[in-house]
Length: 206
Image (cartoon, one colour):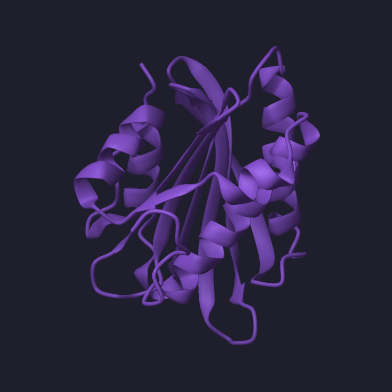
């Protein structure tokens, strides 16, 4: 598949992650001088595991939690603008998912401006303002990625429209091709903090 929407069989949780991150990406493009047409119409999509891993390696190395498999990859290259995004999901068919998204803008767009746009989008989510997840509690933790201190937010909440308890982890970090954002979502019963911390500590763009 190439120019289509994500597959119909994709779980609700994965769709939520993609919607949040693509929405954030559109905001970044708009804030940094791009256009909505570019963000919405120049995207290539793949569901081939090997291709997804190749896209992920363009962003950074990462050790995904046990049981997570490549699900979807997206790329955009047009007019000097570059976007790479990958989705990993748990192989038991549950909604748990991990998304990595990276942007690089043409010209001299400051990296801190892109980082701020990403972070503003995530703060909206973390403050419980998203229609998808009702966030009730957050905690910020610092990690060192490639000798740089990076903050990740650990959130607890519920799925909108249900009582399903969920955990969410988000963070912005420097990648191999620009600024990247990570978002991890899992049901409470599948939450494994040790694995998540290990995943974050494994990130490297060197």
